[in-house]
Image (cartoon, rainbow, N blue to C red):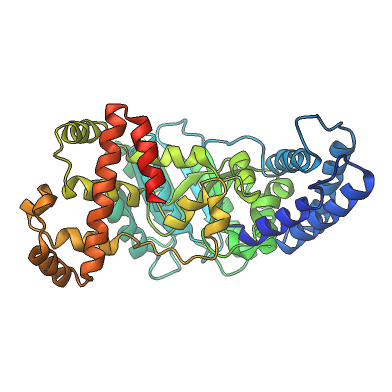
Length: 442
């Protein structure tokens, strides 16, 4: 996400490092590179120019504190301006009304149907709502089937009527069905087109007028760059939508849409899609995104994801097992499952300050734990509970059963033993011992 832009901004801001003070010359040199980086990221020229002008104005108007270097001050100013450019504060969706009606709009291929499911799943989990998905795409043959598959995946009801070809009637029927089923949120998935056309705009405007939604969201593929911004403007002129959803931010995107869409349509980005799974949806926080663009990571989002998967009861059980020296491979496996639920591994690494850049060129497989799981699953229940029983013949059998080498089995056992010791020391307050052990692991 934004790797190319991050690299170029880092190089641009490097110009000021080592300088004792901010001058018009070194600021101009830095901002020339910043503007070039934004243009390469497909940010509109006018927006890029206005951005660098604001940064220059703020930089020249400040004295560098003795505790800060010019480079550090410039990073702060750029971060603050990026945050403002992308919207300033995060904005939630309006869920007033019973049921609350959310109208999804966008071009075909933007990920609208999939994101309708992600949003339903998000509202069901985070807001404890009971959503209903309504299929109003009467043109794309597989659209209704796709929405039903998505609904089944997340355990959410889907309303469709294959005989009805009027999307306005379908939308009204969907709201009536929601009231009958006791659903308090209705998400209407509308038809997309390959390009903006009058027929499409008239249809979505008619649905909007008929159902008066609390939220109208425009779904856009972030990989289309400046085209995404232009399409958003065309939709907003007709619909006056409430917010933007950016999909495919986990792809090889230059970031121009995320950075400039707010200033063009004056509507906030409310959610982003960060993967293919149904839980790959995040609230868009401009300040956190600015941090990530500037290579500062996003620790808050990482902690939030960890808290979502944290099972308090399970944690208490594991604490007791550690205290009694009964922490086994089944417990280790459950911890791996919780980490996997947090999302894409490369995305998680990118949230750790300084790590994202270092890991960028590395190919991190989403199934990084697959071989570990294979080894553990090849153990008997008794061996998982009592790792000390794993002798040479058992290790050989486990290696054959998992398709891994004996060296890999030994390596996993060594890592498991070290982790068990560390966990026990943390419980017993053995900070000095743990520090010594970590030094020995280097």
